[in-house]
Image (tube, rainbow, N blue to C red):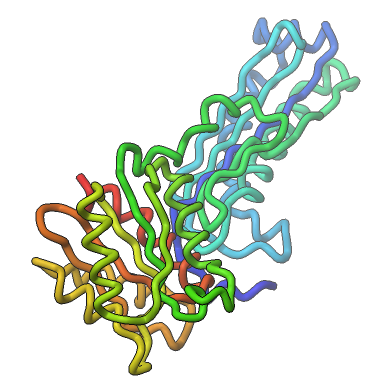
Length: 310
């Protein structure tokens, strides 16, 4: 069983779907409420909820997750002559809830199957799939055949819509071309995916005045948000916090505290990353230079930035 201790809890959502194809006789009996045991839908929906909460009992390597919400929908489709079932599961956890959603769908279909089979056993459970899942580092995942493509294609990409952002990598080695700027590129991709307009990215050497000049240049060109990466360690050349503090009219210590608190690295508290507000309303945030720290830190920032930039 995978150890998820280091992972950061986030809002998780998954929606699964499936179908039960019926004979004409069985479909008529279900539609006209002629089944001996009554309407199977309420029982199927209740069974699905129970199954979602019991998923680790059926799937050995699933983690026990505190479920926040389960929504089950059963409906008839006359054109396809089938019952369509959907199960949506919500949680705030370190791992996803896709197995719970799939378990809920299959259980609901089996209950309906059980109550319909006395009329006709030529039934077929089919098309069970995960429509989408949300949360964690990967954000939104859509099944290639999902019917929610249009609805969710742009979701999660507009959290920073209209925000003008700049990215500054503080690294002497990257500035000299000795190494690739993976962290800066990663931040640009995250900002772009959330709908921000990234006006530019720059790499500077570890010199306080050069860092300050770049930040002020970004501000003068129009910036709501400036994110720096690198120069936050204990070395005498790590001067990003000092540069940022000299320019900030107000500090924002909570951002740095949150980044350290939710990091999986035991060395996160050695980071001197700070954040502040530059002049009127431009937020400047410094992050460590390690790409893994960027990945984890972004999960924290993407929740906080929309509110901070309002």
